[in-house]
Image (cartoon, rainbow, N blue to C red; front, side, top):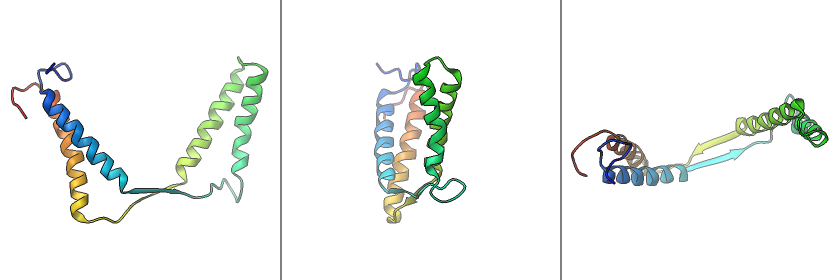
Length: 126
């Protein structure tokens, strides 16, 4: 029960690190605002044109589910749409105090350090 990662490490160290990382990651991500703008593709109001390859691919798949071109158009169109959505995200870190920022980062990085330490064989306790 005390073997973490197949080594004689500390299960308690791993669990403490995992908890610290989860809390630090939650607090850090809670301070981040994500917004989006309208997606323009080589001009204004052209997002709909990016749907055409995927829709053609879906139509081809309804006609023949084994169509390689249909699968390529559907998958490529979906990836193109996903890339466009991700490319137009704006990510902002909300203003917070230096103390709160340090607590978030220390919990996150300290927890990752404890997880890494637990994967090494050692005979110490937490």
